[in-house]
Length: 385
Ligand SMILES: Cc1cc2nc3c(=O)[nH]c(=O)nc-3n(C[C@H](O)[C@H](O)[C@H](O)COP(=O)(O)OP(=O)(O)OC[C@H]3O[C@@H](n4cnc5c(N)ncnc54)[C@H](O)[C@@H]3O)c2cc1C
Image 1 (cartoon, rainbow, N blue to C red):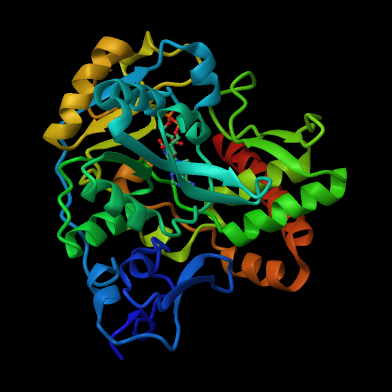
Image 2 (image 1 turned 45 degrees about the vertical axis):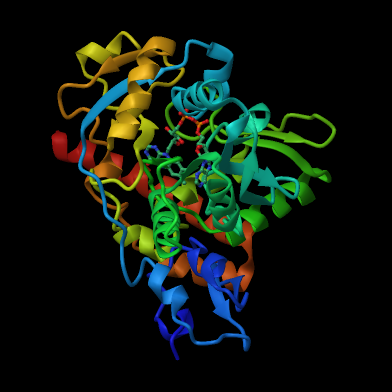
């Protein structure tokens, strides 16, 4: 059997969908594993050609780039920055590229779909890129996006793709296997804490809908009027009502911390400064003195420059956004050093979720973690005395 079904994918697959996109028979469909993460399933139409294995990251990684430089920056448009997760540099890059390539560029990024039940990679023209604004902290569904990107590149269009490093790696493998040049591709990866389960997210949104008897129209993880640091959700229902961030609303963010991530995220191959994208974007938490003047509490992005193509873009950003070069190692976010450590009670969480559903598991595990952190603080205080 020469297909992805021959691999032991649990704890390895990141759901990048490269296998589905490359399969000439359409024999790879994307299902969900027992924890609700996207995984490939092979149907009887498989011709055993082995193409799915040739693009799979479990089998081979694309070449990674060494860091050429780093900068910190933020958009000059405060309203845009308030909607963005960090400094809004992603949207600034989209603006730059729209001006540079006019109608001959398309953008691929992540939007909410099905009343916020799913995060999905979709295509937009310059007019629609604001839909990508803000990180959706859940594994996104790539679907057939890579095939669309291949078609666009073959039509001689320019393409910007943004996603997690493993998704960018899947795209790089896919294009290489198809012998399609990436000359007109702008690849942007994010510093990634990990991808949480889309099955879990779906259950969470369903619980909120039931509690409030309405569909959810808008969900954003960062209410910067509260704080840029941490997760402060803004949730709006179909009738425009803004929900108070109670324990249930806050529970998802707590689980995202180190409980609800995909197995491979705890052993991520890309949690380092060797990157797959031309540029890497993240939050610039580690402000050094030069960057402190940028910090108004509404978000500053860190931008790693990984390729000459990325460097040319970053140089243009210095004209259109408030930017400063980073000369020290303050860009070194935790997830550029090592993968997120798992919660030791994580297995129990998944069991409880399967047996009792979201409300039960979320209450048990998020309340418990508050209790244990209070106990830990108390213990530390006693030790200090
Ligand atoms: C799952 C995830 C984990 C992250 N973890 C960290 C972290 O630990 N440390 C850190 O510094 N930064 C992290 N980031 C990146 C950070 O949240 C911002 O996306 C980044 O700083 C860019 O912000 P911005 O203000 O420039 O633009 P924004 O408008 O906030 O950026 C949106 C960009 O993120 C992409 N995106 C949104 N949701 C997803 C998704 N589910 N999967 C893939 N791409 C998505 C969009 O396509 C768009 O390119 C993470 C992002 C994601 C999606």
